[in-house]
Length: 106
Image 1 (tube, rainbow, N blue to C red):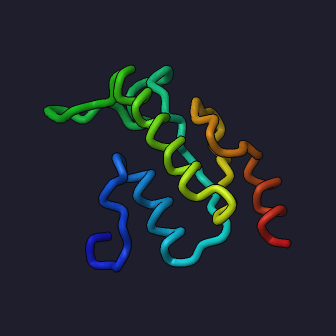
Image 2 (tube, rainbow, N blue to C red):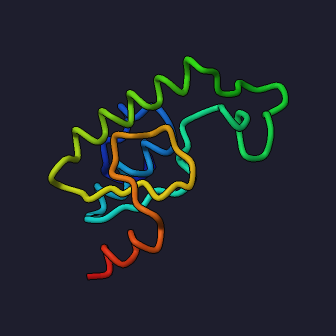
């Protein structure tokens, strides 16, 4: 991302940076998948990272706040739809994947 002329440096996590990157490239619709922002089902879909930091209740709360900042920054500019099956992230509109794909295809 640092090779591109974008300002994603203020972004806190890779998901947030990917949204900002897509928007900087002109994306008008972004569909999110796998953005659960919760540790209810475990820290990752694949298990903990051994010897590295893993999400905590505090970190996922911060993620949700950071995504809310992103939602505010892009409001009216980019249509962001969260199509994650399970999610604690409520700052983006939630739609099932098929419905989201139909909407953005028009």
